[in-house]
Amino acid sequence: MIVVAEDHEDIRYVLKRSLERAGHRVVAAADGMAALQAIREHRPDLVVTDVDMPHMTGLDLCRAIRADDSLRHIPVVVASGSLMPGDNQAEAAGASATLLKPFVPAQLLALIAQLLPPRVATEG
Image 1 (cartoon, one colour):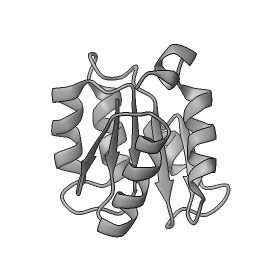
Image 2 (cartoon, one colour):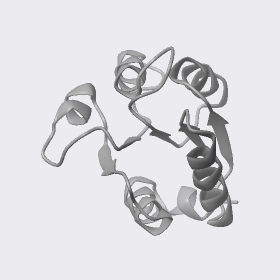
Image 3 (spheres, helix red, strand yellow):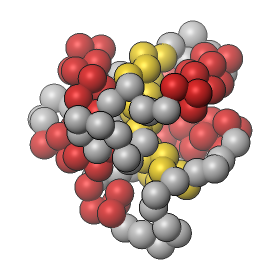
Image 4 (cartoon, helix red, strand yellow):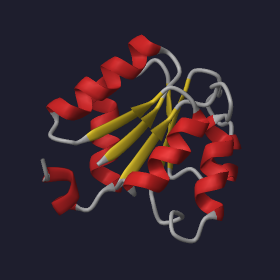
């Protein structure tokens, strides 16, 4: 299962559909606080988060995941249009990977395949 945190409804929809078509179960959240609640509830295999969101930024979400002993193992992909190439804010917050917007779903799926164990990546 993957939790997607994205405040733009159209981008959230595209991410959710793309991941579902690739065989992943997805829980989508419209802000960082809702995403953290979903992560605590569902214990996903991976998190994809935007940076600029209301209530809690993606970087703060990443820090919250890394600060929780029961969650810190979860890979976090920071997908952002506000970070510049070479910016290490996401890495400093504990992100497993950064994907700069705009990107195509295939780029995200390839990154997820690298971060998830093969059995998790192929489960439906």
